[in-house]
Length: 116
Length: 116
DNA sequence: TCTTTAATTAACCGATGCGTTAAATATAGC
DNA sequence: GCTATATTTAACGCATCGGTTAATTAAAGA
Image (tube, rainbow over all chains, first blue to last red; front, side, top):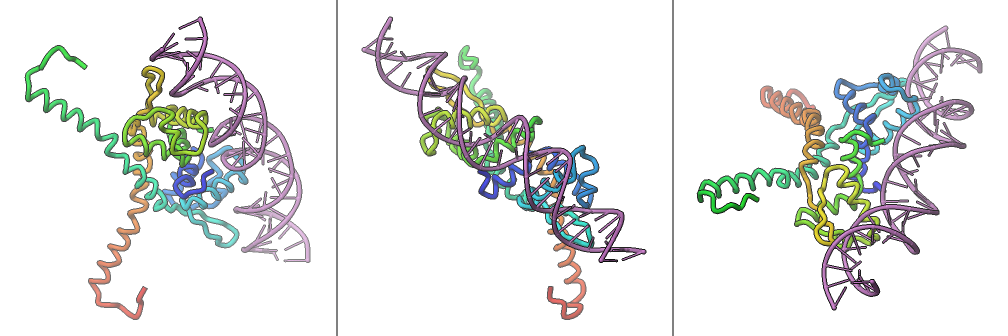
């Protein structure tokens, strides 16, 4: 059901082989055969992983001679990061609460035996 | 095959219903019935979405009385963001190139008719 | 204890995901 | 045009996903 863009990106990232391919592409463009080499899976399998990544906008591909080289397109990750960033306050909030709690502690010298 | 932690998180985020559930939880804890309400899917379906989210560490759950309330645990997103951040330089690099390009432009007053 | 309410589990179904091998396509070079 | 190389497409198998309905478990309350 991954019909929206964000779902497509997350689904693409959910596979470790595809993430490894992306990692490899940070060192430069590569052909299908080169990308397949470190994995113990067939070429057709890699070919389809690349199609998934391309569809998610995470790579671009161009055919030069008889090779199809893949290139990382990390901008697609921006969208996903942006979505996640909207949750940043919710993992930072605990620090705020702790801060608040500490401030309260320093204001009043231990109210009771309430050690929640 | 989502056996590693990161895969589990990304797989959990790949479903729009689950992302919507997370969004809802930013407004406060909620029971299964409350979470199911805005969606046109059955309670068992929501129940399983919650299990997926819990397994990914994106929510925690506690049983109080006969309700099981879910609570957002956004810290799990940190790991995913951290992974993505390692790619930031690869989508920022274009800005660097642009910057470089602009600097070059300002150094020399319009080399030719190259209005790229 | 019996009933009601909240949620989960079980059993099923169709679609999709990820792998395979075999066949097809595309390009380079003789 | 034939051959070798690079990649994709086709056809298949099996596991998982996301949904359903029906049955089960858990707790509250009369």
